[in-house]
Image 1 (tube, one colour):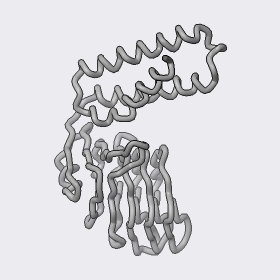
Image 2: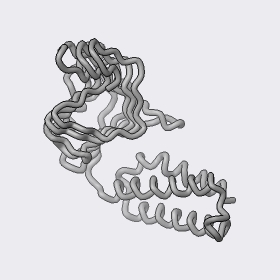
Image 3: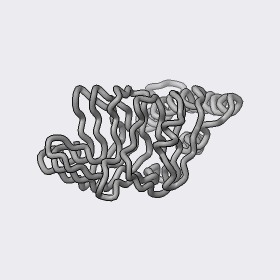
Length: 232
């Protein structure tokens, strides 16, 4: 049925992060499934105006998700797996543009602020069955968790991460969870900033010197700032 086809396609895409090292043949198989889905959709509803509005929205959402995920996979790059409490910064330092730093489910205790150093890499966490991130970066109430300060662009990506318990004591700035400065504008997708504390502003995230990151499906909860913008 059209419903079962939609659900199968959705579940495939929801788990597609596991396919970062898939071959071109597998990408082709996904493309074939997509084509089958479109044909089935059109056969079931030959005229667009007759298609229920909810079904059209699902179709368009899946189409956009398919385009972004398969293009990312096809682009290639090396995946660097970092076990729980492994050294994320060392993995970043050894990566090249286009690589992925794959984190496991669990908590990583951050004692030195993670800095991509301007590299176009993806720091990718895992998600549970509901799509919620399960890779946790914790500052332990003592350290800033993330910083971008080398003019990072949208090609530097943070995805599926919980950034928590970050701390920054500088009263003039902030960014206990993440500080973006020097025209650094990375991409953040499905990230949660929680329980961060800053003496200054922007406890969850502080953007400075023309930095303008792109955030999609990110949440800010229970953050505390001494001045303003507890979340951002």
